[in-house]
Image 1 (tube, rainbow, N blue to C red):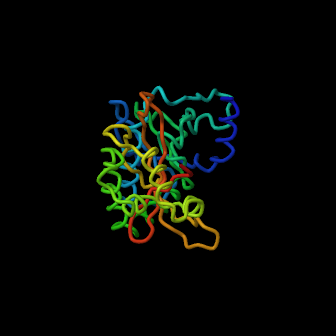
Image 2 (image 1 turned 90 degrees about the vertical axis):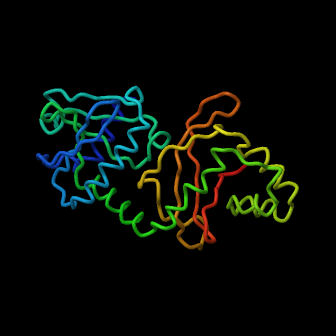
Image 3 (image 1 turned 120 degrees about the vertical axis):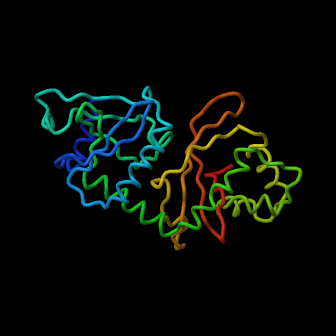
Length: 254
């Protein structure tokens, strides 16, 4: 399986191995400095700073033990351009699925990741999107508070519970049946502190998506974290959508 992973990533990220240079930016991972090499890109200093800060944020949730290294041997076609490939098997759970860290190289005694034009384009698009929706994105942390603190079901009205989520399928199935909706809500949402823990948000977690056939594109965010329901620790991804002037939790189904 590891061989298949390497082959797939090499095929899709061939352009990532554009020339590297001395433009090395440093972040901390696992208590050690790590470098970022912007090879063959035309990012501005502020964009590079934003990429470095986001990578630092994401990697703070990725333990070294949750990664796999594939070292290139002298006969490998990319030997000399990169020292190897790092895989994060839990991509999409502990870091965004679009997170670009893959190829690495030892430079000046430092373990450094290579970001080519393709990887940097992913980041520049994400940075432009988050800059365009700064106000909306800034309001998301407040929406997440009751999910980590726990909802007080007894103090919430049916209207408040309905306004917490947005899911056209659920609405179609339950319609105006408030009792059925409340039963599902109360049995599915966290009602105590620390049942959910969310990781800091990455710019790569935000997208514009069309969620309904013929509907408008909506700003969405996949919030990664962990749950501790029934004493079991589990990686989680929670989907939120900005609609009707606020962020709503969009469960796949209760």
